[in-house]
Amino acid sequence: MSADLSAVRGHINQRLDWASNDRLGLLPTVHADDHRLGLRQLAAGVSIITTRAGEAPVGLTATAVCSVTVDPPRLVVLVNKKVAAADAILASGALCINVLSADQAHLAKVFAGMVEGVYGPARFDHGRWRSRVTGAPVLEGALATFDCRVVKVFDESTHHALLCDVLHASEPLGGEPLIYVNGTFCRVSPLESCE
Image (cartoon, rainbow, N blue to C red; front, side, top):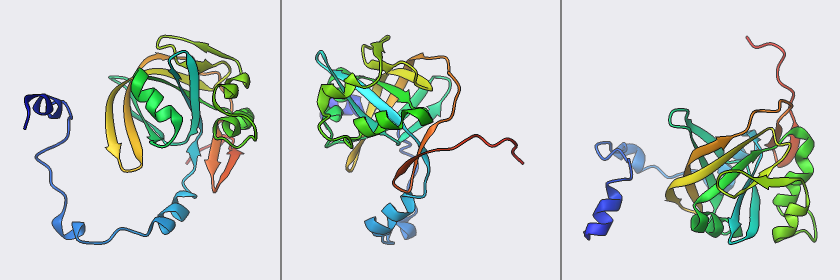
């Protein structure tokens, strides 16, 4: 093993003393179509992930965003390797997670490529944008924004799992979140009481 590769592996944080269950490792995984059907029932919040490719703004709609830790403030974002934003994020080392409100479904569709004739930087003609710490576009009026530096990239089949440190978080505006479930963007009001 080269010295460079050895140094990189020393910073992965993977539990090398843990091993998967050998018996379970022999079992086949579920068929991708069955997995996809099940995932359609997994409701998720909707965000627009943004960055810059040089001076040009780049963005995509995402539902695979998750909190990792509060201290240090970290999130993980999964981005399909085939989208243009994936290479731009890797090159810049920065991204902003813009959490959408229920009233921002149109923006979700724009950045998901669901609005005919709107591509690339023209997506940013929709909504009001500025920048904070990293230079990644920040959506004014989002429920919350997290301006981040990427600290680790994990290669996970079709996606990059991007571990991010939060450098700036907006004060939450309040409101209903935009949710994606069963192939549809929808509004979900918070429960009035929980048992």
